[in-house]
Length: 53
Picture 1 (tube, rainbow, N blue to C red):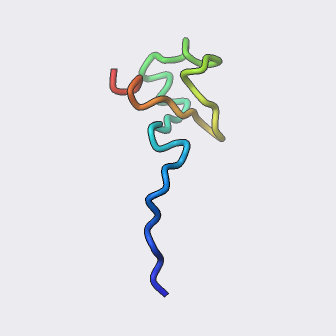
Picture 2: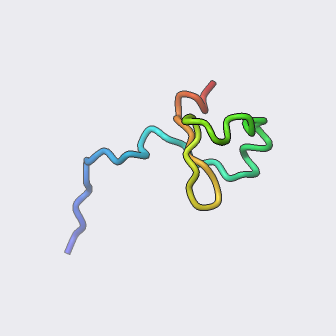
């Protein structure tokens, strides 16, 4: 069977995953614990609009 592609929007479509090392390298550690970063496993999700800045 061929798998159908889903056009559903998931909650993380507008987020970029960053590992802890990326957070340190980009000097975003001050955002840890705020609503701008969502902790997930070994890193964080950041709103893509914030990441682009």
